Image (cartoon, rainbow, N blue to C red; front, side, top):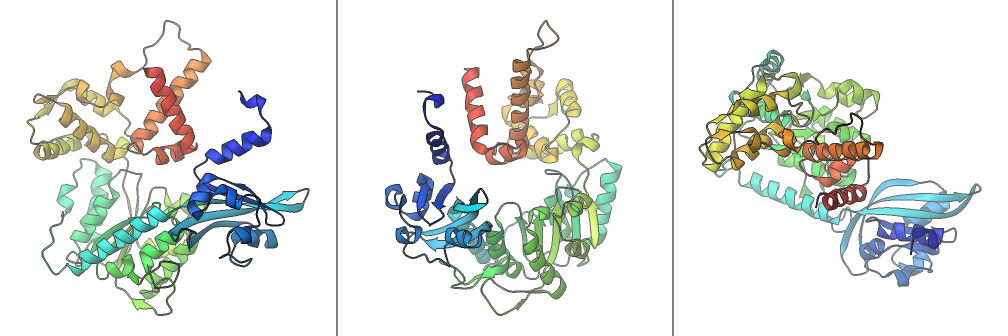
Length: 463
């Protein structure tokens, strides 16, 4: 049977049923007209127990005021990215991020649809991270082994990079806020750790948090802490600002932090106080905040990705870390540094890199910057059996024999050329994201399922 042989409604239902987000749609009277298996799993229910029934009948714990679907029917306004904490019908704690939209036909409300992403696992991981960080802080009076990053470990031959390093060394002993701009993989966190180690706070906690890693509400609870009862399953817990009190908090990809949360950040910087979620009491904290962005600050300001008042509060001192492609003289210097590091780690006897391998490393454009170079050398050290890294020891990206061989005709058939270009873009995205399919899909601007399909298609073609 082909798609042409079935009705449009059946096709739509099949597509919506295969999506890995929960989808729940009701008509203008609140009767469920679509409910997929993911939604049923979230709610601890079954499709047949919900489909065709009124929403409040299927879920007795909800009211017209607490149900986002009913609220959208009443207000005719969308609710975007609202976090919900609740216990499902099986008594399991669930955390979802919901977007609920009104459905209009000929200008009249015809129903509402809700799309929910399950963040329960992330919430549990977040709670675990905070608990572990809290335990680390409580044991700080004991001897704790940690890796110290000094400015001496940041090596370079580049004039601009040396200037950045000198500026960082000057600001390190102060308590000034620092804003760092650099592409992903340029070594921003390394700089921040070196600043912390050269400051008067070096014996106090250092915590790094990527603002793009969590949705707004989870990031807020992670940063500011929670009060028992502030939402279902919430317990009394300190956030990162309290855990790092006296030390340094590094917030990476600040341009990914929602603007509402940025406003709360501003108060911490101005007044030195925080308020846990659900708490009326403020708490004094002494934290040096260092932030980083992977886009130029002027672009973030223009695109409204960062509040102007927060930017000027944070930008007391700014540092720019140039990408590796702009400091090609550092490629072989860093290669030698990483070669020595991984020789020790893997107890190998790799002593040198041959001329061809060096040429390929130097001619590469390094979209993943220093991080990509580091992983490339790690790969080479593991693969190398003798004492010399050859071009064959480098990852597939660097091997000329792996590149498509040119055909006799200078122009490829259009379909083949498109497939070839697509495959190269996918390979590049996977390399830049270190194999993370979700991040690679975002970089390519396609759904994760589409990328997985394309990967499976290419794997079959290669067999």
